[in-house]
Image 1 (cartoon, rainbow, N blue to C red):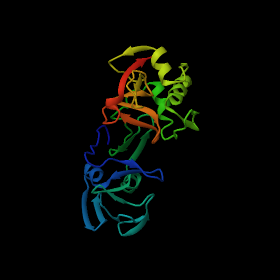
Image 2 (tube, rainbow, N blue to C red):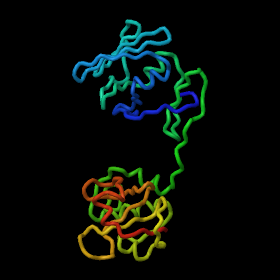
Image 3 (tube, one colour):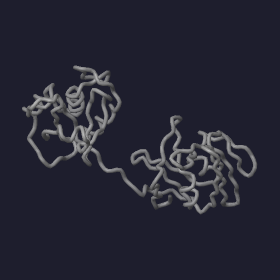
Image 4 (cartoon, one colour):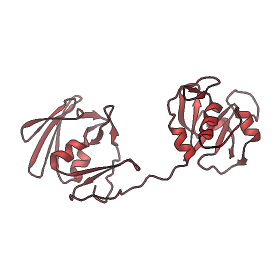
Length: 246
């Protein structure tokens, strides 16, 4: 908001299935200096917002709100989730006449409460091209022997991602571990991480993924396809055997 970040400690904004940015109505409204009231009955909440000489009443689950007593259609119905009421952000900014900017490079919405355009108050950290490519295939299903976006196995996924970035890797996790790059103990983004998941007592890996940072890696799993997991999880932690940097 203007040049400052708005904190969402317990309920974060999200993009609805219809493509609209939903925000916790109380947190944003109070940051704008408005009065917010709520009346809850079961899972239905009626919210009132007053400020700048206007009055809004909206009810969760309904696609209409009342603005100064007149019905106004919402882009997406107000939602009650995690103890918070969420509304489309543009409804608030349009109703009260604020500028709204969307910074696609940093995935940040900027409310010009002072009527001016602003640079982002937060910039997304730089991500390696390999990681950017890998994340494009989140949710692609697991296919044994698969090496295309129609379906990947673990080494097929890693080989495909690196090939898209001009780097040729062997086809299997064992071959990657034996012949690619150099062994590292201090991990960096884009490193290959290897696991022994077959239950065998062996130093040869049966699974490979790409390290993302913050103890996370992305890989093609038999259970859920391409997904992000933690190196410290109860499953992957004991099965981790090492990393290579190519």
